[in-house]
Amino acid sequence: MQSTSPQDEAKRVAAAQAIERFLVDGMTIGLGSGTTSRWFVRILGERVAQGLRVTGVPSSKSTGQLATEVGVALADLNDVDQLDLTIDGADEIDGKGQMIKGGGANLLWEKIVACASKKMVCIVDESKLVEGLGRFPLPVEVIPFAWRSTERHLRALFKENGLGDPKIDMRGGLEKPLITDSGHYLLDCHLEKIPEPESLGANLKQIPGVVEHGLFIGIATDAVVGHASGESEVFTFR
Ligand code: 5RP
Image (cartoon, rainbow, N blue to C red; front, top):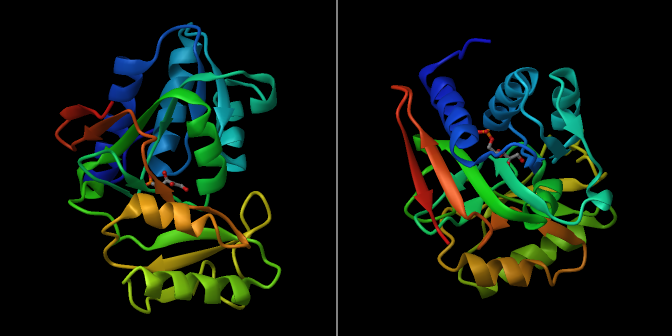
């Protein structure tokens, strides 16, 4: 399969380099979701066809489907103590490895899978690198029941944290909200700047109705940034 644009090529390069650098024969690995992770899973399928032995735990239904198509053996996370490694994309990543994820609607399973892993390697093209988080709308996964009430709590929290009165969009639109793999809604919060992502993340989790949010803090151990030229850089955070 060919990349379709310079950005897509940069995603492919990041995925290929992460496999080269971090994947070891015999590992049980978390499989990310999104277009960069789809490159990762496709290239992984090629390596498996050449004899690499790995078992994958998918972070979305669509990744599981692709992994099966390309011949990657899958396991249920219930049956696995700890994953050796997760490789997944991000919507934003800063110099400390703090990320916003969930642009592909899979943040809940992605966080569960990443947090079950010894290492989490983020694969991105350079457009995802940021000085500070928040330009990308922060996705918050909520229970459909009384979601407007949950949204009011979100607004109050943002105000208390000096984040003003941001636009909040229902993913997919009010007419036909997107339903996540776990049957929830996603509220995309246009915060623009998140000065203290760790405390905001902890506070979001206190709101009844919030299932999970897209702030991934202290989770990435490394990042591979791909470039369309074929070059890549590796960053280690801890
Ligand atoms: C899905 C995610 C993705 O990793 C994130 O949206 C990046 O996607 P892409 O690789 O398509 O740019 O968090 O929920």
